[in-house]
Image (cartoon, rainbow, N blue to C red; front, side):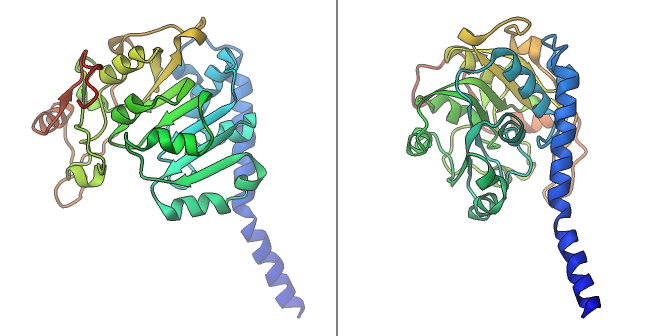
Length: 301
């Protein structure tokens, strides 16, 4: 009986390891934040750190939020998978913001709803495959209209089209993925397809999203200033013009552009393809693209 009790106790301790690691991540993140935020000069790369984000977005978001102090402390994030790795989880835990996360997988949403943070914090998770036709309806159904603090878009495909279609909210900050393989000058995106899935669109796995220039022009048309990109070269950061303040400044796509250093290209059999930047661009140019330059008034583009 004593041995069985000991085994049960050890098993119970093992089950608590993920929770304790989670607490350790939070603590390290708070230390990082204290060390970097006091000296923020507007250089996004200098304040990057990872807690739950993939590339260092946690630090950038903390710096921007600390500077501009959005009037509403709510966030919305698309394409979060199971929310263990995301742009807003640290904002939820460290800053006690509330938010909505959306993902197209029922399994992922069920995982989030069983996560302790779901009852510890003011978080709502909804299952939806996001399109430009349903996005405003999804937000309104969740009770989100008008001012929000932050919108993070990372759906590996229709990012440009979805942001372009959002009319129901006015985020203070927008974080959106861009595809650096298109370069800094061209304003292009993949054509809109409601059912677009990156893994099915092309075997290469690099045919998705929009260029930074396309996102920059779209942001400007909606009242946002591009303030920079992360050092990984895949996420762009925007602040609404009425909230922009020093040391942040508006940048052109060429000034803010960061080329991605990671490799994702695949061969037809699914193996990694060691393509150069020029080879990736040539592949993308052989596929359908939409030039969005100065075409914001065309609703069915």
